[in-house]
Image 1 (cartoon, helix red, strand yellow):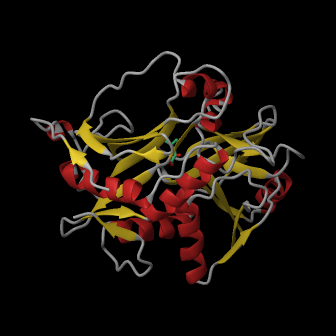
Image 2 (cartoon, rainbow, N blue to C red):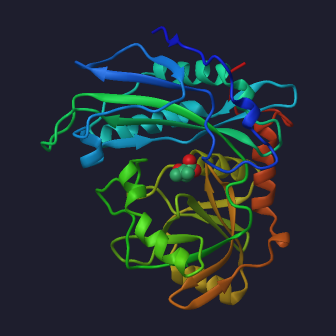
Amino acid sequence: MSISTLKVTESRANLLDESNIQFGKLYSDHMLIADYEDGEWKAPQILPYGDITMSPSTTFIHYGQAIFEGIKAYKTESGEVKIFRPHDNWKRFNISAERMAMPEIPEEIFIQGLKELIELDKNWVPNSYGCSLYIRPFMFATDEFIGVKPAEKFRFMIITSPAGAYYSKPTRIYLQKEYIRAFPGGIGFTKAAGNYGAAMLPSKKIKEMGYDQILWVDGVEHKYVQEIGTMNVFFVIGNTVITPDLTAGTILAGVTRASIIQLLKEKGIAVEERPLSIDEILEASKKGTLKEAFGAGTAAVIAPICELNYEGEIVHLPEESTWEISAMIKKELADIRHGHIPDTHNWMFTVC
Ligand code: COI
């Protein structure tokens, strides 16, 4: 499928200040749009980044049939631009689409679209180690109809935005049982917009209490940890790295999560994907075996946790300078992404 391109007359890439990148504030010159109508995807277009207009009756505004992804492109030392594991995000996008009764997006639009868009905006990919171009593919239902039914028309888009560190310091976490992020049979395993919208009120409440992120627990027994904020979560207890398993369908199958697990296993470090209760974490903290805890996701990559508040009981993690596992994995991921070490897993997709 050929992608038509209308280029900007003047690039805004000079606005990119690599010493001060704020997540999601500045968008690169171009965006991709593809529409789905009459049971098929129409040819995608790359256009100057700008506003889109829509009818007030557009269905996703009312009923939330909308999904997204997060991916990152990096610059290597030799100046090549590469995207980290985009095919995994493409597959997950289609898993989200299926659950939300939305059409599958073909590889030739998602992957080829990414390639052409990023190549055109390659001057927006930061050079600095640890910085990247955050890529946001998304799809929403565009029927002009407020009757409640699965839509028939959809729009797929990709926008991109330079990214630096997501969190500048270790995060303080609040575990609360009042609000539940996901439950079996729900949409916790998808990147559906509603998962994030429903988290806004609980996040606002804990931020007012001085915390950065919520540690979500399961919706049945309210005692097994699930995710932290918008990330997967890992705990290092003794010499074992533990992360909640994906079997109940309540947790997003993170691409960063999968990469971390694979790298750890290859190093012979014990990794367990299994239910992890808050009691086990509190007990490990009391015994002094809780060594590290961190969130993992595309945007933040690895976000160390320094404190956990559970119903007033405060768990302090050891000083981050003593952490070995997460620091090692964080560096290894960055080294692979920036081409400092060989990409033995074929995770990097070359754009140009
Ligand atoms: C990501 O890490 O890509 C996320 O989902 C976080 C995003 C909502 C900013």
